[in-house]
Image (cartoon, rainbow, N blue to C red; front, side, top):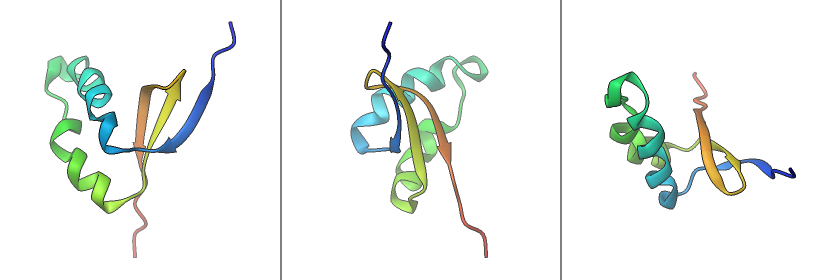
Length: 64
């Protein structure tokens, strides 16, 4: 099995994958869909993909 793993910036089209991930966390009450647009605009929002499917995310914020 040759899975292709990549870390890349989140793009708007990733929202569908984010919604699926969030539906499986905290009984479907995860906050990710609610902050998606804000984090996307802010930057520092990254995805781990396996074969072009988002399987994880992280948000990096530089603090003053």
